[in-house]
Image (tube, rainbow over the protein chains, first blue to last red):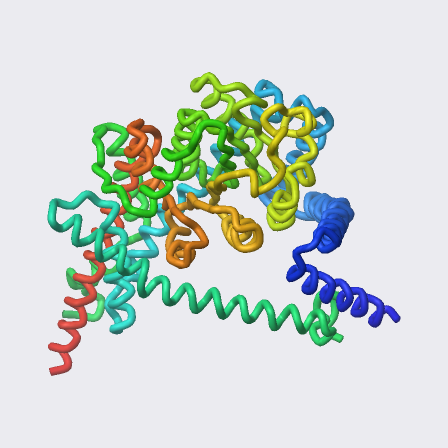
Length: 210
Length: 282
């Protein structure tokens, strides 16, 4: 029964959701909205479990580990407690002078921007090592990357126009052909995988491989 | 030559990455010291969005979905600011939403500032509905009625009490959605907002994401695309108000130029070494 009931629920829900997608009727809309409310409810119920699990593991790490590992665990716990304290009052979200808003503007924004901007350094190093004319395919990759990056750099006319046209062609012909093939492939894969789940063939989502 | 000797091309091929990092740091500082402007040629995919916004009639409704977080703020916020100003200048009504969990505070700061400068009133000329998790579900629910995912706006006012929302219920009441995103939210807008509800959609994305969305441009699922800082700078040029993107372009040019230089150096070294190896074999 532990196996059959979840498979039965998934089968019925999956079939209902497939059928409702193709029926433009208010009953269908109601079914859709009602089913999506369940997703939100399930998500909300999973949230405390996730937080409990994260905090339990982090607290255990803070006790067990030494040095930087323990420090990072303590930072995670402190960050969690600050967010809980900040979330207790709605005013903290809408008041730009609140401690939560100040931390967002002065800690999170610069931290995320810094991390993202560090990509420039790694991309420079990676481009230096990766883009070499080892094979003819690697040469195609190198030339494409070179042309695409060159469009950012101001060039004298008519080079700028030629390069612009070449970039447009690369993006809208070979790039698009490859992307479209990937998108269609992923789409067909998703349909096949979904059907396997709905029909009970794929059961990995239940936490085991039975 | 002993095996331990390194030829000039070996040196070109094994530059310590710390040198690369140091040079990159120097190159991105140069525009801060010696400021200069970079000319940008406006691309078609950016121009169509500008033309669409220019044709907005007073009181028409446009939704601007600011679905990005601080990591991509430098690329996407200039687009958001330019588009918001243009919509306000056309006296269009603007619905702002965010499907990024780090979005609300950023969006609130941006829209309050821009609306204040354009002398627009919250609830009359624009509304900020706030953030909801699960992008796909939220987009689908907005297609039914904005009141389903957003019963109140960001500030806690019931949507039914917001004057500008009186005659606005779902996507059929908006002329277009412009989503600015640094993640896969754009896919959900295409799959659900456009494919299911048929709402005209334009995207502003980060530079690295741009190539992923060109297929949707040709298929007509999106009518325009603003790619990265360059796209944002093009848009600023079209609205004749150079801002953060125009100021950011020199930094981007310098970093790209350095990457190109390193690619050339590496390949000169590689070709020279291959030639040397061939000669040694003979």
